[in-house]
Length: 315
Image (tube, one colour):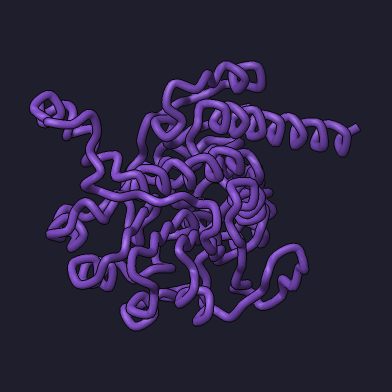
């Protein structure tokens, strides 16, 4: 069996030896759209994280039987074309839940605790010149007693809610699908969540209902000093609106996802003046060492299950 891994660089130093027990493996660190067809032409199995697989790719790969998406979202694969041509598509879910939850709090603490300022205050020698033993020029607050609004109360949102509650926060949520009516936490409309929450975290998928869900007018209603964290998908919060409002109002933004990734070189967020109120990480919330190991183990298992099913059907 010919297995082609198209973007192994996204897995970092995660061990990929499990694939070699399943067949002949070609590993490419990155793959451009121009290179994709040549690399998958004779593949039985494709493993892709973000490389796009189109109808043309599938139809021009006669040996192709299985596409493994090394992620939860499958929007990079033409699913209808795969189904029509009898090619199975498998994804992986749940592998990064704990990693994303942890990164949510990492971003919050960085912004709320003014970590950038205090780290530089010590390292640039200012602390050594201080007349007192401390520095309280950048006040920070406790989570206890604050309202934490969660947009998207799925598995990750619930995990965040549980830990936020342990810190003593009052949790409320807005269901982007309108279908979640759990009584565990206070269900509110988006307008109320934005106006009353000290901390807002987004853990929702990108779809027609969530595209630009938080635009300039919505962000303007957030309370002074609010922290807004997007760990869902880029495009849920309008990035042009963030670039504008972060210099107009005292709101903190933590972004792990952007509408276009990697970030454009001339992105307006790179030119904001109030940089201390903005913290951006390069889509890493999913990528703890443990999460990447679980991801690869699950992809390998998906291929094993497929092979077993194929073998059984032939006997």
